[in-house]
Image: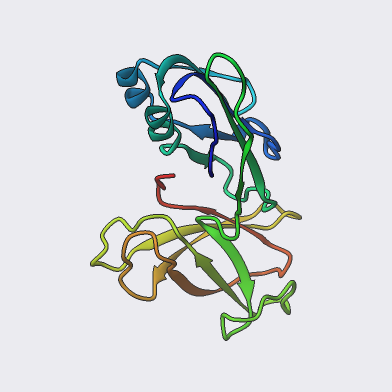
Length: 203
């Protein structure tokens, strides 16, 4: 995002998460240590964003704003885009509003039911048939040179029965690149829903 202000000294700034679709589960993060080192005070706006105050150069404010991160504690966040607005003030007037769009195209631990190819999503199975699950997990690998595993909980909403299954990564992952986990299992009903417990992710 580009911020334009005619002054070289900034006295305050505001960062707004304009559409907090998952409520308190989602918020923005900022490097508080860097802010303190720059003499900038950071306070929450109560809605996932921040207010900054403190005299610093425009370059220093830009350095701090560049550390902005987004986090969401839900295993299945609302996938709509998030809009983040940023304005700064030089003590005389506000800058333009810089607008950034955050796109949630895939989330860590997203579980899908598929056919036997693991490529086509399905919404039902025959009773006592094999159920196929995939997880596309974009969180950092525990060990980039080793094959990871992930545990998925499958729940029958009618009976409350719960089963867990361990999925094995198809190959060693690197960094935060996508990885697919594959597993097949037997289950009594096709109406089960899946929720995953993904590895801890750094956002």
